[in-house]
Image (cartoon, rainbow, N blue to C red; front, side):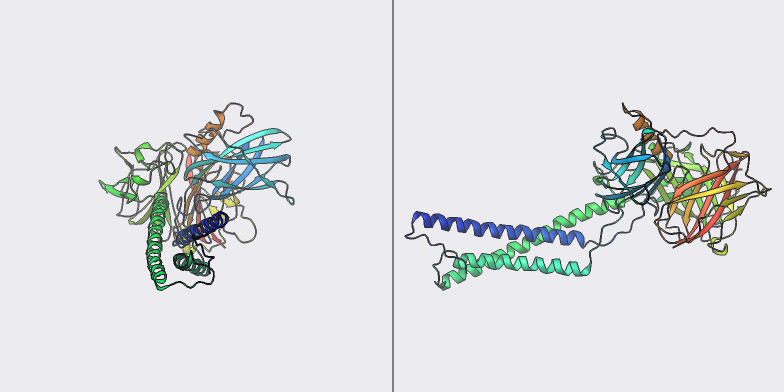
Length: 536
């Protein structure tokens, strides 16, 4: 029973003591109410359903290989599945003389992109001094960058790695924890009702004095009113968190691969537009970039759009084309000769802030009698994925008798592990090819496609980052006073021999069967090698 708070015939000290005790009782009650609301909000937030969203078509992590001044680095960024969230950074240095590495996240372009905060010191492995790890909070969605600052025997170096940051899902909560939190919420709610009833019924009684019927009736009325108030607060809390969850869901949907609206015009011209979406402009604020407009995209290694058409379901043919703007918010490509069939379409573009988008669509095409391919356009056709003997695909025979050989590591391929894919190009005599040329400014291109098409990644020798975003990141470094010993990746010359080896840093996001398309250019002709792999 609460100590009585009686006002009649009390000394001043006793009255002050009673007032203090009453204040303490009210403070405890308010604290209980606040705790209940916090637990309720936590329960609603954690009980949200799991949302499996594919950022960049199922491959959200970032892999980059380049130089920070004199130091060659392999950087991988495991992007958090929720934003804000913690990104896991792994860095391997080829140089043995690196003493320390620091990392810091910031915006890729716009306000704040040239004002880096204090960087975090990466942890150097005791077992492998060339391996460093760090954890960074990513506080917003959109085009970000992770700046890597290296200090070593050869001085200092710096490089910036673009990171497309977006929420991919909400986190589920274990059922046992949900039951526990629900029980605590009910306990606090019921406790608040009984506390109010006790205060009204016994709040100012003398010790040992029993409440009369009038006090009991008043207590019951107060408990009913408190129960109504608690129920109202629970309802309002549910609405509040429901609204916040809906807003977060919109942000998750905002960064889903956009749907492509495809139309065949004049029997051979494919038009690509953004399909209408239910994501409205109300979610566009400082936490999200402007909604994608095809009229605003920026060039990415020489083209505004990279279009891939894969014949389904066997993935036995692939076209890599480069549509041009077609007026308004649309692109169009004149198709080459193509057999009738169903095609999955992936269209890569980069918005002005450096965020990469992949439009995804499906279309059924009739037999196409089109124009001959030219420039950087290319195609491949061959065996279906199901008939190639996964995972024994390590060499591909080219049309001129040469080969592309995958220096596949021994042992099974593991999902989630950063890897370096190395391919040797040989002539028909089995010797290193001497006629290799840059393909769109680089040694080669690779497309990693999961058999069910849930993963599609367009990768370059610099990694999974878009070249347009990489240019923005390095331009930001170049524009800062005092920046020294940084590495600016330069495009290769359009012609001239290059080494007969091409490497791609990447990591499979999920287990399953994959088809890897490796594209190179030899003696003015684009060649495509195809490799299949099973990932555990």
